[in-house]
Length: 624
Image (cartoon, rainbow, N blue to C red; front, side, top):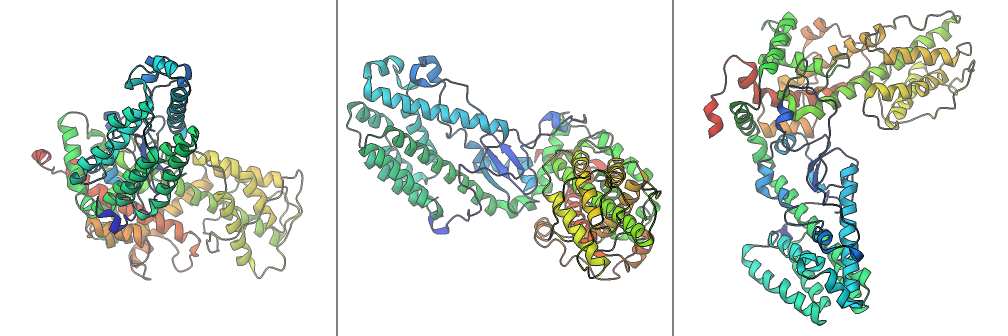
């Protein structure tokens, strides 16, 4: 680590140790891996079973310490259970050996270029961890105060160092520092941070904490990234001020900052190692995961019966164009044609899948649960937005032709896609819901129907993006339905249409996944997804692991065969009106196609020879 000061440890994206993030993350004890998708620790045997789970956790949370009351009147037994909130043991999961042997982390590193460690402060487990930390710092403050003001009472409560928080803290600091400095400097570190000597000086009232703070500051600045210097200075100022002014809360605050700095340094090192090791880990993904899963199979902890049945069922129901090599689809997908046809089914809302599910989604997808669920959620949103826009078009035609209130709102909608361009920009605020009839509010001097539709779509998208987070898409859209209906009616010049009827009609179409309206739009986007997915797979399937990662996560759509007429035969087969199709859905479908191609190609490389093809990887390879 003595060369890290020069390199600067590219850790600018890492949040401070006390920061928390709303992104999805992987829990690793007291730290989490923060990603754009979701990561988790290595799967348990239950995770690898074929039984569906009721819920899925995106985080196992942090290890919490036993609950202990404030030390001021705590018994020696209770105080003994307190330990520093950050120790060498709690940070051991950041060691490079743990990183390279964490199969879930190694899998996730293929998908997120921003993946990095951060402290685990999320959810209930994070809250409990913070409470335990606060208990320790309060106990330390109480002990120091009692040590200074009432030594006999202190000795009665803390007869030995096992009950004394300060020596435990100093030893934790030394142990963490030993993992951050080169081997040649550790003897020097042990001399400078001799805990037994420091405690003797402290007991005699001759400890020079300001000198210790200056020494620690020099050590930390020598080995930490420059971005941490300001934090180190803050620690020094707090310890020095507390020592000079006999300000015990300030002194404890400085010790707390010291521990936070050490945790941040350890995280910086781990994140630097991830960046350096990423190419090697990605290229070795297939071999590593095959060995990992083959060991599970050999030990009887993993059964592939459900996976093989899932793939065989896909073969049985796949259309001929995925099986006959003369068809353009089979040519584009190659040997993965049946697999990708089945994979696209997994992300359709009408597929009743709880991941993992032996009947629909086998446990071979155990490392991709959250990515599949995110794709399903995105597909659901895309479908529902299209339903809203088709509802708008039906209402707009009513206003153009002066149709009466007897118009059947629940009649099947036109199967053609709406004509507007998708965008994330712009929004319209909805007014409160009214009863009875809503007077039409035409746009002020609109240029044409297309621009009005575009503005409506932007406003609907803004409503979706600002909706409160809900775990399941159907519930989210049920809550959004009234606002969507109101926004749609605001853009239709049809004063004869009651808002309540529009709300009821839209709610019915959005909630009835098996209904004709929902199925019609889902089928359209399924065809669109297969069309774009075949292009991605054809262009990506021969890339190396690192090449696949760079293209799929760096330049999603660019350079992936988007030229017109690339697959005219397939477009004709899919019956997708490419020439007249408006690009509103392009961004979402293109993105989903790239993500699914990336996920599927990596999955196929790991599992094809083990679970799906007739020949199998030699089981002896897992012993290598």
